[in-house]
Length: 623
Image (tube, rainbow, N blue to C red):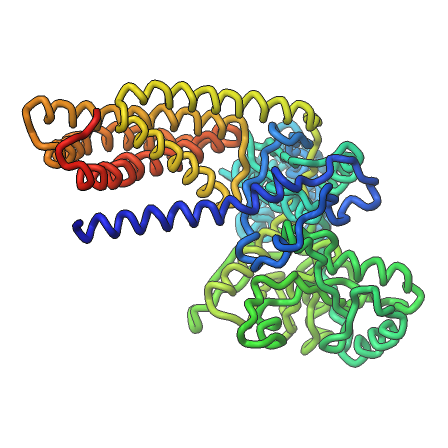
């Protein structure tokens, strides 16, 4: 036999074994030892999932990489919560304009220009300033509005000047506000322990949230968690010696079973992870927060404890060289922060964007504060050169740059410091999103909520699997028309479905009803490819070609016909995958995987078996 036959056979055996390994966690955790569907109390919503019967010991002893990926069920198959929110961009813009109106009036008063009236037209999103003297309207120029980048001069009539939004400001603000809301919601639901949560933008400013497997008792807590607005604040990091003293005192209160330990002059805790599902049961941050609440009397006046993720670079220095830090649970630590300084929050940030240092090429965050924020920031930096500035999202520290010198004008550069360029760029982009969420704190309104029960999901699974089974059996029987060759096609069809499910499991994808429909469609398309090949081979046999030559010519002639039909379908699947959302996207992903598997099984799996059969019986082939 030729070398290519051996290589194709080896590849097929490898793919079958690899697919079985990838699907093993799904079979064990979803079918043999599923999670209990009993509701849990809201206050213990992050406890370890209960399985009845529990996972076997042999499975728990397997290497972690073999259990990392599972094929989870979507919202329509296992039930859960679906929410739809709308981002109130108009309210956010009007609030920002009202803030600008107050700042402009104060600035003009400081310049000795008296304003008799200020009117905010919320419908047109315009500000009307009426001066006592008509000549004073000339003070408002494009240069004056440099500190108010969202505003532009619309018209001047007598002693009244009208300011409105600059061109494209509304659209940019809408897109920015929606994306910021998505990031905030996604980060907040990470702690829910929900498998494959989905947060996506729907039709402009609408956001859809799907939480599969969420029990009824956890719905209220999930809604509160999602709708809470993230708050951005700027504070000062407390002196290191003071922080060490406070944390040393707190360490005396730590119990052996608390999960808290001392490290780097502070207190730390790691996320508690279910070893079987890799889900976070309780974050290290929650462990530390519970401890701080119980010992609030130990925190000095004018100080507060916030929390920070321990960087992977630091963790690499703490573990052995052969340990992959990416597999370790996330570690959190306490940071002591001062609260005795003028207030400075995300509301004072007018713009934030990533930039690059022309000398070093390293990215950094550039932001623009409003007039009040700029003045406050100047006073803080002038008085605290050499101290660290704490940039906080809620109670999580996202950056702590050192104040190198006093910074006037409200133009702030935040250098992320360590790491290679790509890691630093990722940090910069993440911080920009956080800062922008503070710059435009657009409220979100819940427009729609539905709770899909597990019984409905069970019915969907039953009907979907029945449809797949019936379709597969009917195709199997029809292919017997081609005798032994039909059995070869049926084996290729089994490999096709196996490869699709393994591909979805390797990506950590969720199986939905549209996904099942995509698999059923793939079954029909796979058989169609085999029928084309078989008819081509029959044509060659009628022309008295030898079985070996008929197979070779038949596959060659069918190649472009099958590729053309599958490529056009793949293009449609790619379009649906990129522009669709939710069920449409799930269908497209499954269909695209099915097309790849179909082409492979039609031209390599069945052809390899045909060649083996011909070598065993060179003068006979049943088609």
